[in-house]
Length: 85
Image (cartoon, rainbow, N blue to C red; front, side, top):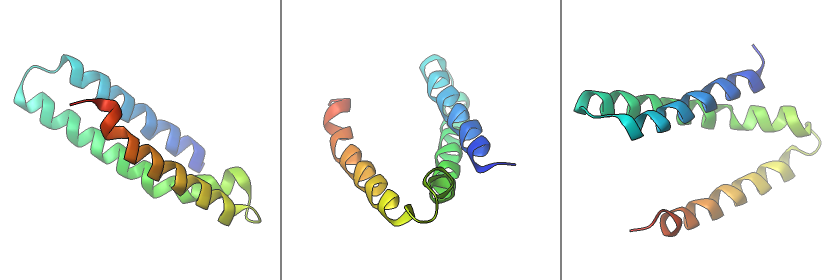
């Protein structure tokens, strides 16, 4: 199976788990959806370098990983302030 397809599947799963958390009412639903979300994000993180290499090629890979990690870091810094509280 192609790496891009695997990333798309797990991105869809994390999106569905996030939407499901809005409607969850019981403790078991919350635990199941949070575990599903965590596994989907972990799978995406595992496939991140392979997906990047497939999209940009081996010759541009170091630059692309640098840009990607910079964007992930900046978005992580801003995520707390953006989410509120």
